[in-house]
Image (cartoon, rainbow, N blue to C red; front, side):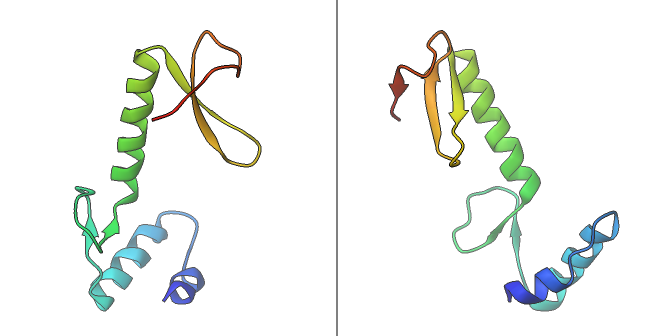
Length: 87
């Protein structure tokens, strides 16, 4: 299934139409609530949720730091990569 999608990805305004058409033709349900197990997540909803989480973390004096390997750590904003906080 992933190969079919990859062969049809287009940059620009046609992308949404192609993905929407594929979803309709193949019975894919897109979950914008991010609460349904086994469903495809809506990309905008995921982005909005991650932005809201980042805003809340920043508001309480922490920030998310991503290293060159893609590993994310939450640190106190006034520390320079010396104090990690687990969650």
